[in-house]
Length: 258
Image 1: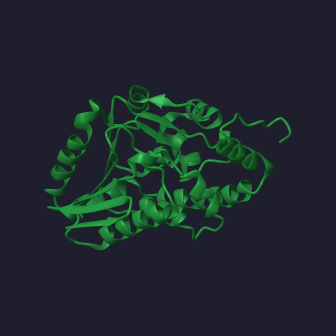
Image 2: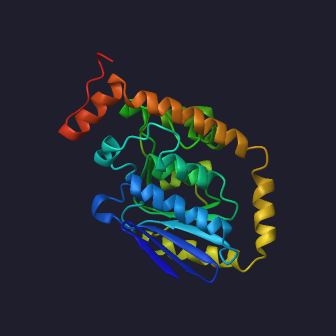
């Protein structure tokens, strides 16, 4: 079964639903409509007994550049009912195995969504970054909780306060990815692992994932809500306005007055 929603492709076969970011000409930057489609796909897969695993993938050259800035400014996520927050809640509570294949840049939510995946495979061209501070914003997707848990505080602070990219081997070292492979092999390896999972009993997969995450999901959702409230407030503040104006004008932002 295959469906398409403009820039999000959804295909289900033999127990595996593959969700593909398909906006390569815009570096798979995500719009509100794409977030809604992603949330729809995850919500449908969570209740479909024929689906056992979901794979998230992009292109061999780019996973996702994060938010589409122009769409983001036109439809800012000012409430927790916004499509981006609906997607984040769906991925944080998804009960079945989630596998990701990441090649090229994974910016902002392109990186933070991976902390909710169970298996992550990266091309050796993958570059992860969480530049929220550089945009006058705060972390999202529960990353202020999950990044220090995985990386340790100091490496998390470096990633979130400086917002500088880190490459696939560094992501492997801190445990964000399971394996680094040539980009042309990445999606195929993720699919092979998904098929291995799909051959296992669904009840055992769901219960094992529940136990692995027991005690964490509520804390993640609480942190997501707190981050979302701060994020919405900070969007209207001078630092974010300067950052986004500078981005649109293709100049370096000046935060000296903010």
